[in-house]
Image (tube, rainbow, N blue to C red):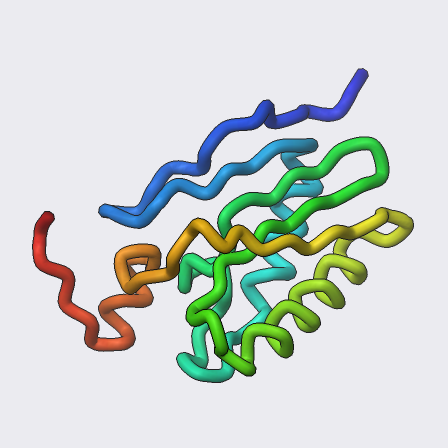
Length: 128
């Protein structure tokens, strides 16, 4: 029996947050997202998944590609966070070639943050 594989699709958005593109075996995706939730952004003290710093995660044939969104063009903490994300993926997906990319066309904003995290940070979001 072959493992359950998620086609390229989006995770359900959380109240106004952008959708996260996920593709690959479901068990590996869940394991990897769990590992990435342990990566904290030092500026906010929250994890990079709930902060909306991940644009996409694709897993296939011994390769993993994580596309990150930068919180700012010159943010010095971005490299540190990317390094931690890379190491978390290595632990989660041993024997997998891991590629980290950055989409310069996607801008981070507080709207990317999960509702629960916005509440914890005290960020009120006004409707559209």
